[in-house]
Length: 217
Image 1 (cartoon, rainbow, N blue to C red):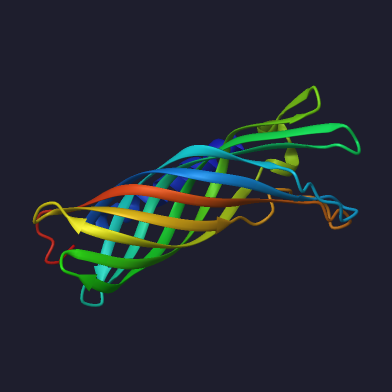
Image 2 (cartoon, rainbow, N blue to C red; image 1 turned 180 degrees about the vertical axis):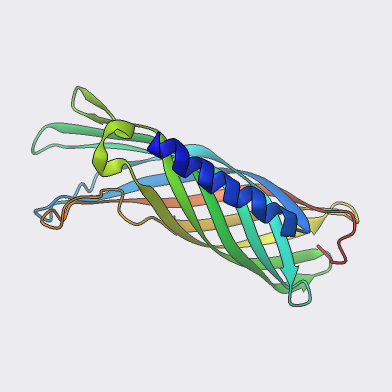
């Protein structure tokens, strides 16, 4: 119930922000995600293999500063996975998680060549665990029932992209983003265990100017 209330509040905040947007966007991306793990003794797992997952994004963009700068407000569905093992302890690990989140960011158009517009983007997403499993050897754990994972995940991202108009009111864009989350593990002060998600994402999107918007794409 507590998780449901938090999620509803998150989506309500996003819905309320839509009334201020002048451009809508939608994107589909492939993300290569890896997990950076460090236990309380400082030991790491160096042979974790990254997983490839599909991520979705939808939201509004508010152009400002002569349309060179845009404020981004949107929702996203993120999937992360990784697997690996430790030969010394004969252990196997696997993570597979899905998050629903609110994404806030800024993009800046820094160059243009003919109709191609190049931009940089900085964003931070607050994501909530919707589904997740962790496999340790032959044991499967449902992470939504684990108190140490029952929290929001904060993921800062930076990236670059290029945009190309397909009409007077729409444009396609291709972008790359790098992100690294804060620790997923919400342990006690005496436990320094850390688990971070590192992502490399390539996405294809479309932006559409709404009627009445006195702005350029």
